[in-house]
Length: 320
Ligand code: TXA
Ligand code: MG
Image 1 (cartoon, rainbow, N blue to C red):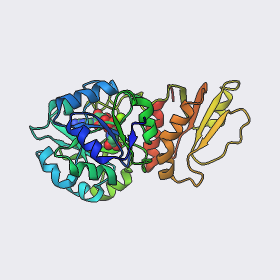
Image 2: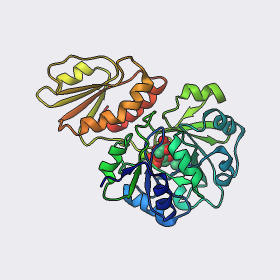
Image 3: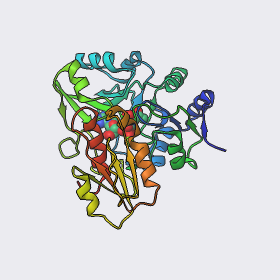
Image 4: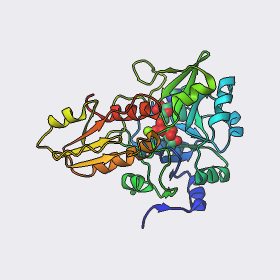
């Protein structure tokens, strides 16, 4: 029997019993557990094979719950929450002492967001506790944007994938924190920097582990297919280097019409970056299951969601 189901009461019962449930969000599917259950949180790390130094995001039902989770909300965080929640933005703020160290990897800050998905909001409202939910993929691999992606990874490990259909944004939330009074982007994501800056002014990007030990999840290689993947500005040149191999192509909008390639996925024929972002991971899952020798991806224009897509493609590659 499939573990994919729309039964919210079943999810409530499982979560209350310290079990894990994969939940839909507008970004990607999350592997959720009760933040106050040591058993559930440990099993999130075990199931994902995620190292304990990598902290989790706390998901709450509404901005009202924020005061239970964090001890101080800076003015600019209030503006951001008002503008973008429920939505694809995670805030990193000073934590309340009640938040377990296991969630925050011992840090004095906690990452939190109100996700924008009707089913998960309904679920959160029925639970007496918030949910910790990292993306529902084994550590380092491609994030899931469909219930089937999660079931393929974890059908033997969890009891339910709560079916919320295809994730509309398709890449993870943008993570924003504060260092003194400066706003820092720790992870590029589904909310474009330009939209954030329109609300709070200039932000600084610190999204690599070299420049920011405060963003422990920002590994160089992540979101990665098992097929060798390249990211390039000059796709026709890159294809020439691999002639004779089974080549899979991932392009933004233009049909390459190359006889030497095995398969090609066009992310948005209309050149719409939001559409491209929403299809990105599904395309990567798809190409990774076609027995290809290489995947060659085209670099996106470096603005708006293109920046976030490039970040994910870069981390999916062996070389640049
Ligand atoms: O869109 C999303 O954010 C999805 C959905 C399920 O909500 N969740 C997600 O979680 O992407 P995960 O665990 O795959 O990524 C969480 C990221 C990690 O890179 C982690 O290092 C960072 O959040 N993070 C968590 N707590 C942090 C903290 N206190 N300071 C800095 N970074 C933090
Ligand atoms: Mg993840």
